[in-house]
Image (cartoon, rainbow, N blue to C red):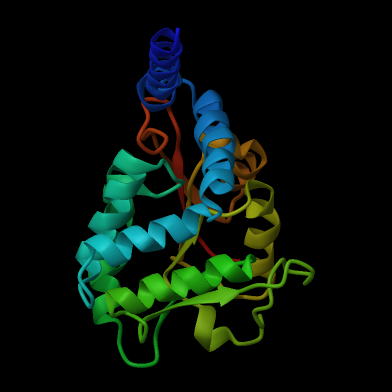
Length: 256
């Protein structure tokens, strides 16, 4: 009796593990919405509850385990491996990363990683995060990579009118050749218009927007594609680590 019960428990556990690890992830590979529901909601919340840690905390632990201090490429490799093989996360990934590199090359002749390394004194790459805990983890990852003098994660107060606490009048700090939009999709248009109103983008500035298909930003696409201020081009990659179609929209600002 006990042997049968134990065999049943082991068999049930093996079945559930197979569902979690292979069956369901394979089944949702071609549907972006289902993939996000499974990976970004169900699995993340389950692991958060079981481990009493957040996904960014688990990713940071992986960086500490796998990446070399002061080696940015090893940090990128560790993050990519974690997101692809251990726990899915909304990481740019290798496929979209190559597109991002090509867009950066158009304006600076260096890749994103090289750009961070070769920025002149006083110039930095700024990332915005409204969750203070996640912003703190981002700073630790940046510090581990050795790029803390070139990159910084800025905590943004969600209650601010702009959706952040950056001072738009500090034009010298934020005007630059490119903006990467990869935050709340409903903020793509308001934040783009805010950048325009504050004069923080100029003729030739490249706006690169991620996830314009999954989960999707149809209002943003309509805006940049029908505006005389932008010349837009669509890239058709996949949602990170799946076979589902996603999109990157590159929009070059033509002037006011």
